[in-house]
Length: 226
Length: 310
Image (cartoon, rainbow over all chains, first blue to last red; front, side, top):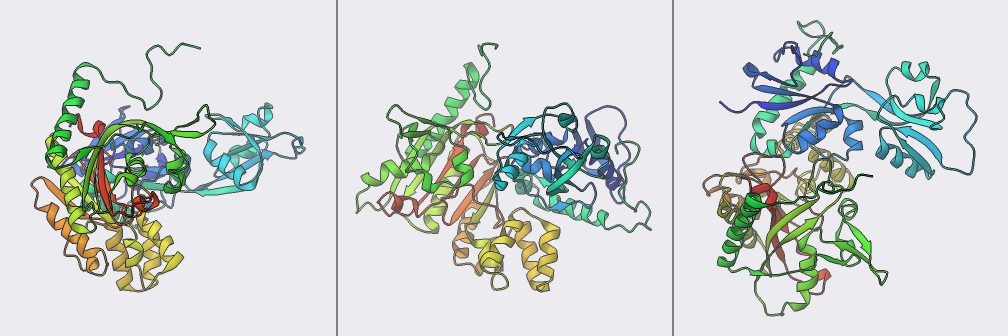
């Protein structure tokens, strides 16, 4: 029997809808139980590694996982050029520039201060605009930065906009669209090409399941990971 | 700040005792095999002026360089690749009547920013065959690569063969110029649904062709290869390698070339495990001309890190 396909599963905001997709037939993967970060689903020939979103490209690129799911924001930020055969219709959002609502413009004569955890994406955006920006690197809760005087702007993901509005911010400009992608390791592709593409096709088919079918419907977040 | 007594910069490596012995033993076996095959050693500097290299690097390759300014104000770069260095230092020494020149090299290369978890420092051993054009030389260098891997104990390999420009050529006549380039880029990224819907709008035959190219794994007798000027050569190399025990060969025209100076045939070798190629090679017929000695050239290099533990 061949080794299982190792799947890097992101535990961030994509986890819910991805879990709902994997729960659909024919994979029909039952919810994971326990706190283990490795989950074997032997009867399906799959092994899941539960990872932070930003670690997915590293695991897949280095071959610790054969494939994985990660947002295009993370792929761009990490300059990851892995093959990406599928883009998922769920978990989409946008990466935008945000500013405090009705705030006075930042003082002229100095670079704009921008708080973000996406340093490369933000820097590229301001370079394209020809605007000098001082990027303040944060690892989370970036919406706080303007209120506490750390930054003039925030560059972050916006989904429904609820968090943005709750923190007194408004969207100034969309920088790029973001969508979850299936990424594949090149070595795995060389060694297990047929298996990988068969798996990709199966996932593609599961995306097309009608909402009327058993297990179909929108990939809404379940109460727990699969 | 805590003094860095024992920690290393990201991506740097030190080897001692058994690990160092294993790596040197693998290197010696490789070098012995290369010498037996008629390759002579060349030694190039570990730092050099940046200017002669810059025209042969794309933006990513240039960003990977570790560079500094010397006391005369010249910008130097640490060695990130042997092939350009060898062309620069060997071109002037090649005599006009030399039919074939076989050289090998070994030493550290340093590439920064190669991605999270990637090694910045790597010990490369490689070989080049200069002055011989075409598939026979391509096959010789690919065989040589697999021979030295076998000498180092790597017997089971998966070889992926590609060719610069092949993907765009096979998208004609339906897609040409910039359109072909854009579609080829998305096929290289294996964007299945996106390329399928675009190709389906052209014709069912074009959709099937795009799908086959995207999935790769073409056998040597695939009719698609017959449509390429370089196809017969690629098929000959594939047939030549596939007779080796433990070697699986696939032509994958969607695979992007690993270095921007490749002009035609190229290949990547994967071991039984691991996510990155353990060896890479290809043809770069324009490089020696840029340094004043127009010579066809083909070569390979392998990182000792990928094989010493195999």
